[in-house]
Image 1 (cartoon, rainbow, N blue to C red):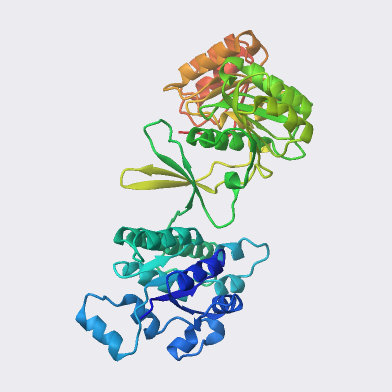
Image 2 (image 1 turned 60 degrees about the vertical axis):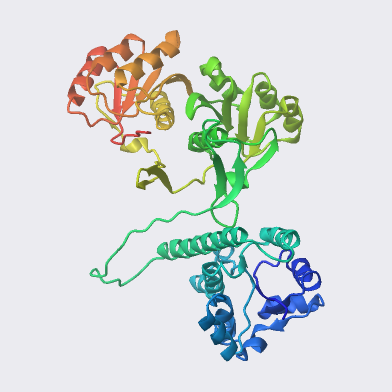
Amino acid sequence: MARLALLSTSDKTGLVEFARHLVEEFEFDLISSGGTAKVLKEAGLPVTKVSDYTGSPEILGGRVKTLHPRIHGGILARRDLAEDRADLDNNDIRPIDLVVVNLYPFEQTIAKPGTTLAEAIENIDIGGPTLLRASAKNYAHLTVLSDPAQYEAYLGELRAKNGEVSLEFRQACAREAFWHTASYDRAIATYLSEQPLENVPESLPQQQHFGIAGSLMQSLRYGENPHQSAGWYQIGAQPTGWAAAEKLQGKELSYNNLVDLEAARRIICEFVGPENSPAAAVLKHTNPCGVAMGETLVEAYQKAFAADSVSAFGGIVALNRAIDAATATELTKTFLECVVAPACEPEAAEILQKKSKVRILTLSDLTTGPKQTVKAIAGGFLVQDSDDAVENPDNWEVVTEKKPSDDQLAELLFAWKVVKHVKSNAILVSRDRATLGVGAGQMNRVGAVKIALEEAGDRAQGAVLASDGFFPFDDSVRTAAAAGITAIVQPGGSMRDRDSIAAANELGIVMVLTGMRHFLH
């Protein structure tokens, strides 16, 4: 008797050609549901509709098609058990050798603007996940394919093994099927969790769930170091974020490139919007070596690069405007790993080709990032909201006798927006909307202050200083004033705030407390 394959797919990519090989090359019989059967029949392939095979019509507008003993008996039967074989014979059920299923496009549906809850619910597949799970459970006796990308490999198995499929291949396909259904269920649960609920009894137990799943988009050469393997995974069916970025030129992105690019995106999105002047950020190892604003984009980049031109070598650049010819010319004057901007003008793209190895990316939406961040720890993981609070100087408190001028307040806001993206302990010195010195990732704040001021040098005269955390003592305030700092912004909250404020008053500098810290570990 010919082998039997069940085909029921939402994504018809490559399906007809695959089915033709099954029938003509390997003599499979085909059974199929609704739309899939129609496509195969129109292609001239012999196919039996599931409803004809089971003797039960599709009902409830197609909600019930494949949920039938003749289908699931053929899938779940253990062919090495006499009892199971007897059940198949007694109920006129053929064993199914191949199940090809992919699911209703739930994620594509909810990604469409204006999708209603009812529309989303109708795109929750029931029969498909049931078929996948049943087939994957019984991989010892059949093969399940959940992705069109698997079709050619399956045909290759049949050709290489005289019409058979290895247990290892079937197990690998089963694993992918379970991941597919797990990701699908996660997307549904996440979507429903985001829908508002009314009149929920307080006594109803509330469990907190967090799920993360993705599909491998690209295998990376290695992780942070060559001995670490790594991969780039895409969340959801529709490419978003870096998965939606366009790479105009350059080598493949590495793990470290992507980590640095995300840090760069987070900084530059502080300055995205028509209310902001052109801005540029240069990063190294996720820390900014220079961030600046200017009248033009090229001026902003020149100021950012000049902030620490030594560290900028081999850095990552993020821009809040389309790359123009003047900026492109400046970008080609040093070695850079990556440049990202919302767009790139044609003339600029031609200029940048002189540095063909530099990765040039355009990402039209630089502001949309993850709502939560995840870190793995032994035995679990930590989840927190992203630090994307909008800064509002109206909520700040000026705690010194000397008050900031409008220009000083704007400078303090600039410095505060940037210091939140520097690894703690973090200190940042800026003037004229450009960073001059950055003290990052130090074990104590005194050390961070010293590094930032030494890097700024004489440029610290008349500059401002931002600290991501409070000053535990007044020593750093005195050090800053001695270097020429005129104003300080910090969160406050120390038991010794009064000492720092008193020192600022004594030395005639401005101090502003934000009431919000920005540790970055």
